[in-house]
Image 1 (cartoon, helix red, strand yellow):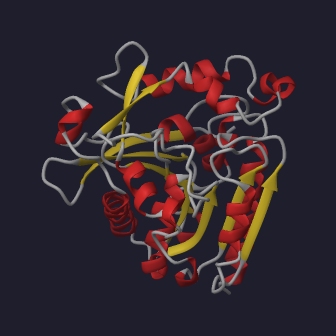
Image 2 (tube, rainbow, N blue to C red; image 1 turned 90 degrees about the horizontal axis):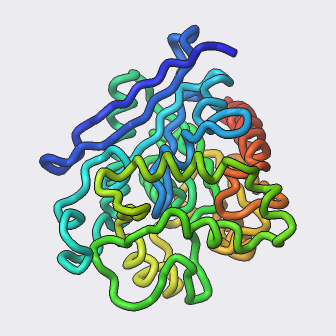
Image 3 (tube, rainbow, N blue to C red; image 1 turned 135 degrees about the vertical axis):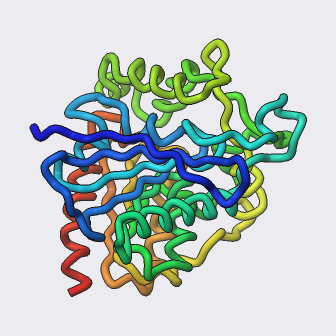
Length: 321
């Protein structure tokens, strides 16, 4: 196995005193990658990038496997997550401020990160991979910046729901949510048959994941971290009212849609409704993975996600010839 180089980059956002964390991994024996082998990963609504893409379980962390395959891999934390700066509205109690880090703000942070990487690496485009809320962020960005995106992978992305979202607990929306890491295990596995739960989440994996996410918030207290609540406001304003935050028809790059059968947060019907709207993508594919939940990239069958992504990245390169 080739040695990997790891860096933590902190770049200025478009807001004074707000810095964005970029985690970077690549093989030490490769110096030049190009647009087709440069990847930027985008996290979801609750969990920072390191807890999705950089937990060393099974055959290795998600980022490590992509890097070993010869990709230059970056993972972004938008403001309010992981090593990025928390907005002032997250420093007090949740009731002290309105919902923090709306999707529009996250798209701006992704824009900053893409422009930084393209400028620093002297590239015209890069590959985007977004999970859940990250699918909204990367999808919305791509719809208005197709010229800067090589291809787009969406893992269980948000889409218009039937008026009820599992992420929305109801009641008033404050600045941020208090996320209890240990109690999340039950919610994580809720959609899976009871006899399959230990199989899809092997012994020790949850504990390794928990250690990473607990370390991601400097204000962690008794197993509880902060998660910005702006996404909940956007769910109520858009997804639960039949409105989308972007138009998939405006995306003109290759698209891969990935989803797992036991995902309770994003249904297979939502995926079907979304897939048919990528009318102008030159190449599109939808892969449905058996025996996985919304957190499939941290489960036993994550290898299927990675294999599908690697196949897509190679195939979509042909579509640009």
